[in-house]
Image (cartoon, rainbow, N blue to C red):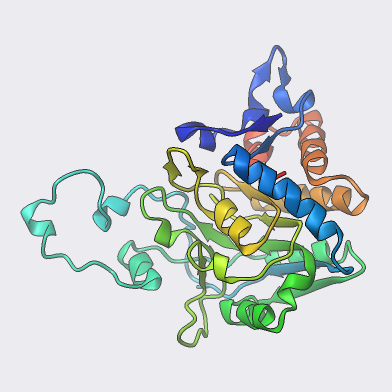
Length: 301
């Protein structure tokens, strides 16, 4: 089943809908696309990439350096209206408030900080270990600067799959804040640790699959005629074919287990849509509530 959702339906995991006493994913494989034209482009890209020289299996990014004493990781924040133009008039006191000019300034003004993610370095290593040619960026290397270096050298374009076990942030009001959040410690200008939707198209990817195991990585503003904007679209512009991401905050231990099963099925030769559907079915059969496996959705072909 190929779903091109409109408006708020972009945030609904159709696989979790019930058909009688069963989930839809138990009878259908479901994938998403922002528009029919995008789906056709993704299909054409699959044929193009099949003719490339052999690529390395996987680059996994995890264990990024955040702030060790932050206790709460924000979900989808609803207070963007403190900074950005929602459709309402400004009150007099608001007219004098300065608008942040950089992404880090905006997050500081929103009082958002990023907690360390224990176990993500090990998770990245475990996923990379599933493949013969897997590489890990962890700790200080899980940074925007290092990713840009790999992009400039052409190495980033030689990976068939990319996996990010990091923070993610998606704004429904201002796409400039939507980003994969890499290391926030020790960054030197001009690197701020945020790979935003505006920056991803500057990367050169030749990847068949990007998996972002970050909270809310699937969210983004919805524009009429364009479908879901945000990371799936930005990664497509960068050259990626399929993107698996999450529609809401994730449970870390179950996320690690889910992603490992997903990549195990991909390694065994399953196509991405089937691998995701089979992983969801396995979780459902084990009695895991849909709220834990439903948020993972695939955009592409």
